[in-house]
Image (tube, rainbow, N blue to C red; front, side):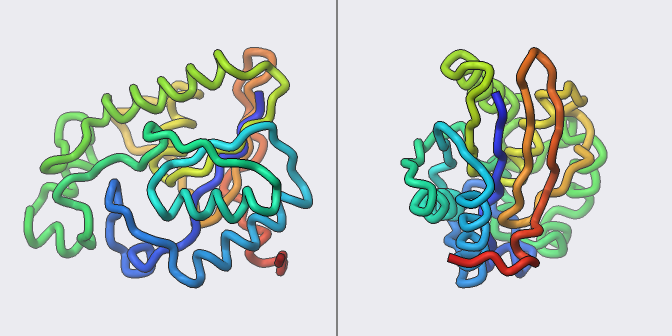
Length: 207
């Protein structure tokens, strides 16, 4: 199985550095344009048998824009939502530090032992991501190509789970809006073939 991992397009909260988590923020005009550029690339370069998406609007609409060009129907799955970050949602780093001094630094140093106020536990986040990956493996054959439209944190947890990283530490990944990553799971191996590629945003793909 080969996964095409796609992060949603830009939102206004992305622009202002506000944490989104489970907050259902929409794509902004640039995010819609990014999704269309990504859709043009996927339609011209990629094939996939099935598409899954987070039901949060920023991912769902990104998936719908891609699906329209690829003649697909996104399957929405709650397990693909971003990690819920409790009191941090809607705030910038500076806002959160003012409200909860020292909590953000402690969380970034040791996210398992220093959770944010009201956040979804990191182990629970991994368990739902693992459940989704287990179902993919059970439902799709080794050669199947699967598109997944979701969130940066969810993609990071997927990759960390697949390659066995310590979830008690910060992951060495960054995923830009409307980025594309490829993970090949065929033959019992995990191979990262593409990571955080956004060349379609620079190369002028369009509908």
